[in-house]
Length: 411
Image (cartoon, rainbow, N blue to C red; front, side, top):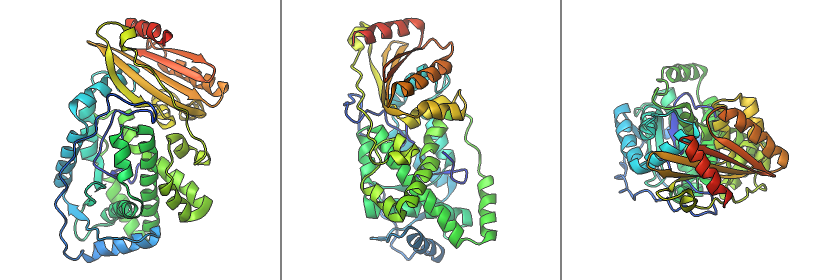
């Protein structure tokens, strides 16, 4: 799933991509399917930019210290128009089969409630909370607003214009390629850098180029935005929000390290894990281990088949742990991560999920294992640790866990 602190309540988006069943960088995912190639949107009008929008574009260049290499024409649209465009893209990029498989795996783990329609939850959240997007495939910038935008709409515009600058100077098609290859952890890390830079830039722009009255108006507009829909579970909401606040904190650490040059260098040599995003001191030297889980379909028995495969990064684990444990305990338990992967298998209505992680030290592994035992409580799952490796086994019922344990023991 693609998808910290919210940006002025609503979310802006780097692309229209919604979700992907991912893979560990070095273990090929047989389930990975690239999203369909969409026809590019018609080019925007070459008419002169409205003065208010052109002014924001000039200001954002100055704040970010980058220049546009080619013309970008922001498209102000109504709420209804942006909802229709987002719905069409989300429905394409998160097809029913993919959503159903991920839904089963996540329900079995317990990060979303039983009965959740994951695909609909993603669509509901995206169409209600996203207020602008920059599509790096079509180089198209759309924002909810008017040709004479309000302070809040200009704040959104500053964010999306930063994405256009990033694309023209550093090529954001790399993010699309990572997503298409289902390299979730690398994609989430690059997305966090991208969104964090845009958040930091729009905030600096607001401080520099909005009056105190305009900032008050911006805050009033933001507070009137509707809350997330009840159909979207907290875990899914956090998947959407993770890149913004955590990405901004990462960018702030880079700025403190060596100013905008450090941020620009990070785009040229992107972070590879959410661990690096959460712990900037680990960027760029701390590289995660490769975690491999064999396909246990045959060992599980007749009728079982691979259902889902996904990276399990520190960010993913942190969001999982925070569903049931305190923030401090979750952060401590997730720290020391060094790699992770999950695979799920299905047979009829039965589902079994194996989540395998590796840690920097035996102590880190033990702390995570203890936290996971608290997390699963009487869920029927079980935790096994050996040195720096921790395996967590989940099943739709006890027989599925027993079958998974026996199959994993032979691996």
